[in-house]
Amino acid sequence: MAKQFVDTTIVAIATPIGNGGVGIIRISGGRAIEIVSKCFSNSQIIELEPRMATYGKFETPHFTDRVIAIYYPAPNSFTGEDVIEIHAHGGLFLLQKIVEHLVSLGATQATAGEFSRRAFLNGKMTLDQAEAIIETISAESEAHLAATGKIYQGKLRKKLFELEENLISCMARITASLDYPEHDTEADTVDSVDCCLRSTKAELKSLIDTAYEGRIITGGIQIAVLGKPNVGKSSLFNSILCRDRSIVTNAAGTTTDTISEPILYKGMKLVFNDTAGIRCGRFVMPGLDVSDITIKEEIPTYEFRIKDVRDDISEVELIGIERTKKVVADADVVLAIFDGSTPPDDEDEEILKLTKGKETIFVLNKYDLMKNNKSEHYKKFFDKKAYVIKTSALTGENVEKIKEHVYTLTTEQIMLGKTPASSDIVITNTRHLQELNNAYSSISGALTALKIMTLDCIMIDVENALNSVGNITGTRATEAIVDEIFSRFCIGK
Image (cartoon, rainbow, N blue to C red):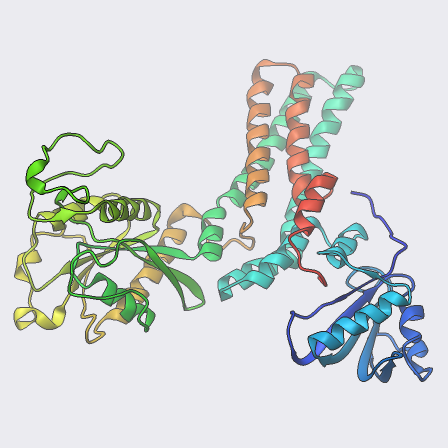
């Protein structure tokens, strides 16, 4: 997208809404110096030294405040325009009145993300860097900050610009071959284009492969806490969080819905999901006696196996069980909890089946109640390769070990091939991933067509790939894409 310069000078509060020790107002545009100078009783504000703090008295007809002004001259500023920051006392009402006064002198109230949008339009950052600002502000872990920091530094931009150059080179070769066939044979051009596209496809694949790690970094490691009722699932969940988040009672089925809570561990976000207990029984409609019901396939909506009638399961609990299965299916790691003080039963067998194909940590809870701290009845229950931790939610024994193994297990998943953990760039943005997948699909189509069709037939696929990559950096982004991205920014950024 070509550079654009705007005549209006914009102003907004740059610090969070609320009262504080200091509040910052940002002004950007060609009239910034002129407008701000009208607010100071002394002339020193007119002679602001770039990037130096200048103390002065900000005056209006109704109030006065002592402030510090910092001047960032164009083009060496965040927006690429003249920018002045006014550091005033942090009362919200005061800051709003300062903005109102600046507007009365000729400034325009900035819209959401308008400062960052001007920085993009003036070539101070690419679109992916602008989005990295949003992610940096909303980051909840050290890993997320590190990943977005690399993107904001321009590492993704550099890689994408290289891919754009490759694709433009491919298109130029195809065009030259079609326009001037006497200068080159089609076979030579096909070989050259094929090599270029394969190289670009491999680079795209390496970026796409980091998205798993990116999802872990942004959303956290999702851990499903699974078990039958009364095995101490919620007690262990509370012990991991170091606070009472789930309700704990002696009654079976207390937890009927999923409760999610994140913690930070070694700079990584771990999200534990306490789920409804899995148990077998008969689904009973409210108000009906069990003896009045003939067991048939009356509930096709729910996949639930009726094994015995010792428990009556309400509709609410049944829905909770179905949600549990969904949480387990989507989880990165399953924490399967068993009561180590009692032998496993049919419901424990059901729990074991739900963990098939999932990265699972098996936990024998109620370690304090185990006879001689042994659990002989579980020795043949688990596979020999299963990782089993004996814990006590009551005493907190080995709770820290659970967090450590969740972290280690997920790190190993990353290192064992799901994503190149050593990659300097990690894709954390879903829009970027979608565009990369689109580019990858287009190049795959072009390579397939190259074997059976003429060169002119693959131009559309190569151009589509180029557009997808350009949509990330902003070089080929439409106005609608730009508008949508900057609308997610706050006012003042």
